[in-house]
Image (cartoon, rainbow, N blue to C red; front, side, top):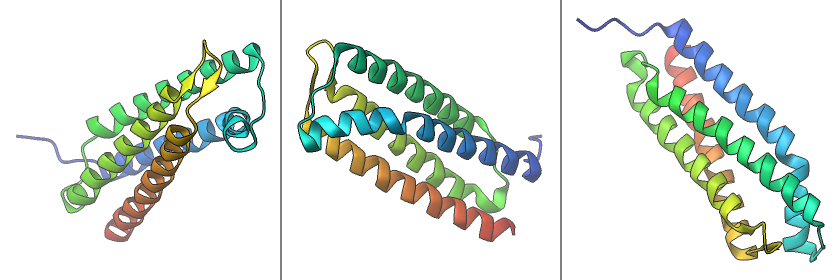
Length: 143
């Protein structure tokens, strides 16, 4: 017989994942701004700056993938299985957008594919809007 999902543990895990995502996003913001400056303002970056962006984006994606694994693994209470599955999909889309942004940068050639970069930025934004909407639905059902 399967053990019933613990709502308190579930909500704490979701809170921890969202906080880790927000914290990492804050850490990555200055590196995003550097890359975005190349795309929007045709700024030039040094090889060192490209290396910093590469390292930071790689670390961010690693954290986001770990969060994704936690989301996929956690058992949700029966009342919120649907919204939880939608939350997992939205977070997976967010991670895919981050990976796409990372891939839009040619670190060794010190170039950025502007259209791919901007498209991935929009994908991340849309996915995070969906994440927040699904969190809201989950909180309505459990609140």
